[in-house]
Image (cartoon, rainbow, N blue to C red; front, top):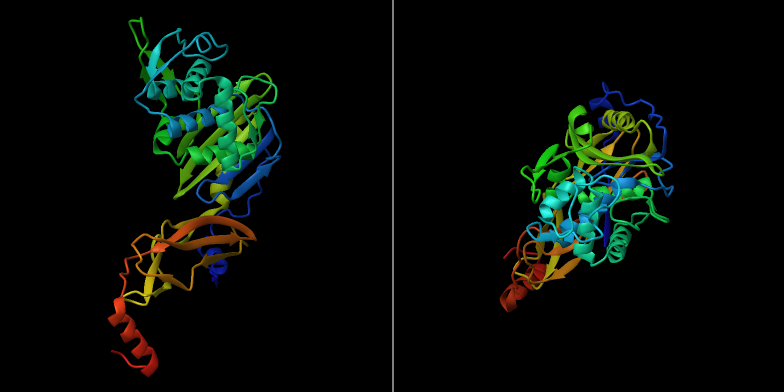
Length: 373
């Protein structure tokens, strides 16, 4: 059964946010590809050739780190093999046979942008760079991200590329991991350096962490073929935006203009709260004939003047007892201007035990005689 529940808030929003600069035109960005999305809902707020496949340099390392957090152990030691030692480009200067914890390798990967750290992680998790690239591509397909990975570090290679939207989707998935968020918001760290009297000092290359209020990450990249690439994010008023610019000479300035425009133009609206909702599902064979339904997570979407959205939910007419608290019962989602956003699970707000014969008999009497017993 599908029921339609419509929220008519556009007129209210016009009144509440009348003083905000809602009518700003989208900024012009001198990039080969660019996109700005709302992380929570996935809504695309800004688009400039966002689907064009382009080299993306060291922003590749977002996927490398994502796989490390999903498949690795942060305390496990990672050994740098001969393929990792001496990799060209930015490096943390791993020596062959040197061991660092996965946690420290990731700091070298994401703060210092170590190409050698990327290879060490790839070989540790995948056995080889080639196998790890297959893991990267499989994960990209799962995320619906248009990307083709050949290397774990983003050094120029034939066929290695992604769209701006693809990189945004990968970044949004990575930013759901608390440890990843902490890593990419770190400005400075130290890690061990074997056979040296001092430690490696790692400095994050993302200037936005210092220059833009509310910046939360994520990763820079540059090669002669890819140009300057930046995946960035910031949070304000409960809304986090994730953006990408590929081959953009004004990378940090462009990122700030895109973020400013996004925060000025869109405002977060809570369409469904997490917790008990005014929804019920019937229960067959239970001590009670209904169960309250709640959303496992709330739904908040970014809106601007003129947006029209509807909240849909899908629940069965009845579910069989027993019902356990937190049991999945259905889904809810928002359609905004015809686009589906933010699907969440609807679950039982509490348990319903089986009723047995006595309870079933009483329900029959209530129904037949229309009386309360």
